[in-house]
Image (tube, rainbow, N blue to C red; front, top):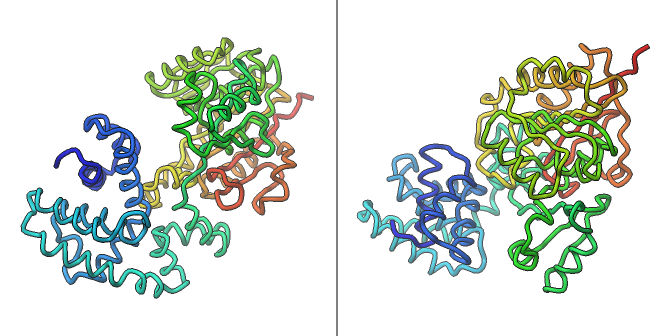
Length: 447
């Protein structure tokens, strides 16, 4: 394969199919190696993410137009056909003739050149039949699974948790591009000043209702060029910013963030606290801890210490009862961020069976750090009750010294059907955020 955008996309899909690695890391590495930049890099990225978003639908269209099972095809042929069908069925700017011709050329350059005629025939058939086939899909679970390329197992789980209407809406939202949300570094400037500077360069920024220092940027590349100093802001989805706002950190607080990397919640807490008090940000891996440390320094945060430790291990004795607020954003299945990592949807739910136990262990250890009258916040970026409400319910039943803490979210109260006394579930199709769960718990005062 040479270094064209389509070739890089095929290489990425082959690597993903072979190793099941994270799409963003895999693609970043390939793009760096290839030297592709600008529009070509953007095209390669769109092809990879597009195929992963629509994989079940693409494979179904291919199976309907070939007698030969997909699993018997040469892997390179399969990857080339997938990228071509994505262009035929789910893009408007690429002419069908270009998608077919480029795919045939790719096959001829590969070790599977013998399949060029087969590829040409299949793609012409898909182009003729795609609209009819897609329109024929029924509006039952199986049909919606194929329509939105969300595995039947996951769609069924969403329906069980949230009802049929929300399950379909979540499946549809999984294929939408997430908004680019920034958090303004208020230690170095104001939101108004940053917005004015961007708009003077012709870049439009919109404020996010309820989040005073969050901005939604339509063209992030243009924004980066307009604001050359990247210490003035950082990327952070609105859901994560809402989590910190619900935590309500105050000046002078001592805060522990037990699973902090890449550090967004710690940084935003520091902004709320005007860089006072003390924030301890922990992560399991040295390299991630060092990244948090470097970013904090760049942002001008002086009251933050980054520490390498396992959140599931026994809490250090001098941390017990020492913190006003503890952030417990635990490792999770990630089904709330499918828009950003489309390949997550294809993982079997059984592969996450051990997570609730780990999450509960981390929560129990984190709880020991909360002082009397303090706050413990539990959060995930998934939409599975097994990892969310059920973990918190178990914790409350076994830790009578904690109770539900009232959530005050006037901007969100009338927009979510999934809110309890102590927790809220944010959803892409309702709030425009990542899928996210936040529970706020209060440690009772000593009597």
